[in-house]
Length: 325
Length: 169
Image 1 (cartoon, chains in turn blue, orange):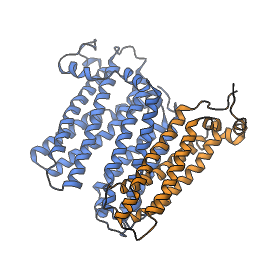
Image 2: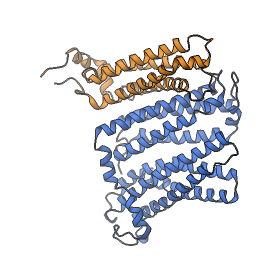
Image 3: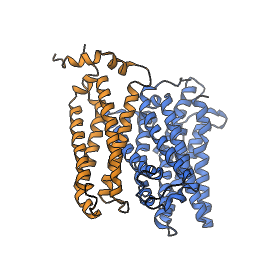
Image 4: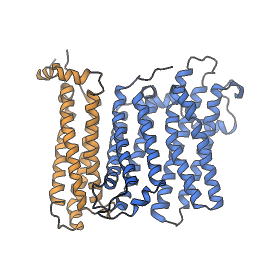
């Protein structure tokens, strides 16, 4: 398997996922089903996470076809630009979905949370539309039979309007590299986000494992938005760094293992909240022991987060460990 | 040209320094660097939780049991002192000819001093009420957060501000 395979494997997930998430949300609103609303938000949050490797694998796929002269100039750049725009909207949608889930389950409990749902609905509509365009521009690259015309600059209707907002990938990359102080600032924020994330997630995990046992679980769990704020900062600075040096990260084994660890963390969080584990610790008071399943999720969370740190540090020494096709 | 002190070259020419710097083994330089980041996460992460709690977030977290986090903070500090010395052995000229390095050390020294003050003044008396602890800890917590952010930033800047990577000529 190479990175082009990986891109083909992953690239339909954000497109179909955004549409399924939106569809579920619309149905849940029509049916006024609370469970379905929550399910649709979970789907959108999961798709936001999976969109990251789908986006990152694009540069490798470009490497594999860069010598193909049958592809009209500009098609790949147009696809990249549309993907960048769609990715940002997808990540905002995912973040809003998590905010909605948090408000519903932790703050309001059966009170209206319609403002969250309205925000997610708006962003997922835009995201699904942008993702459709990512799919169409991506399909144009490899499928000459569906190209409307050979001139990619001739866009009509809605695409012409959307294309105005799509960044040029080359210019975006240049912008990120314009000043080394901007780069230093981004990396600094990435480390501050790391400390905030590990600190807040870490105390909760340690409590479930039995350290800090005199503290009830519920108030520690309410630190989760701080952890997610750190994760948000790091997702944003991570995406911007990738856009700044796409080939540096793309052909790096440590980078991909770090992405794998992040996906496993998503799976771990899903397992924790959707199994009995979370319910079993939610009301745990001072001195009470967490059951083994919750301890398992806490331990794997700690191990995986430290793996993310370790793999992030190895990126610099594992550049060019994946062959360019 | 004014050269940096010659002992820096002596350190760099030692076999251990050269191995740390140049070995392709994954257990050389980047292994030390990752422990330096683990230490950062333990030290600053745990301290930030205490600081944020003292500044008033999640008041339902009882304060006194958080005292156990000082053990984790000292563990992080020990890891970083040890890994920091190894990083310094790998690139002595790079660090010691850069003023930012000394700023980083001063910021860490003050931040650790604030940390010990937090432990004695806020967590020192087990009979203190939460209100007393928060009143005593408020400004220390603000300083602690600011100093750690400063220390991390200074550390990050070392990668962008050095004058010599290794001893010149």
